[in-house]
Image (cartoon, rainbow, N blue to C red):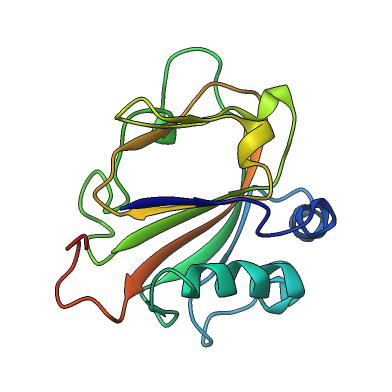
Length: 170
């Protein structure tokens, strides 16, 4: 399963999320008991509520751990692929997130240096299309980030409460 929902948040929402990051490379929230990264409740703001609502219109996520959300700023290499620049699935290269049913990506940057997201079937989402839009896919769907110099995203790795078994795509 793969679905794209355009304009889930506004450019102002994207800037607000980026501003929460400051000079950090990521902020992560994994359930209510986690300490707050960044010292503020970025994960409870209007932008994240909009993203959560969009996700909930497609699947029935369990927001409790092990599910988590993350803001991530990556400087993507323009040389050899590494990390998420290689083909991967959201259950992890070493099954470290085998519990994950769905991955979700909202692109928060919009310039030629934001790279692109590509699926193994050749479908490619360029920044001008993906910016402020949400891609959600089954955790077994292969994808990678294309080359670019600067990419900031909202990510979610989710367990779906409505699923009978992990990674069963309906």
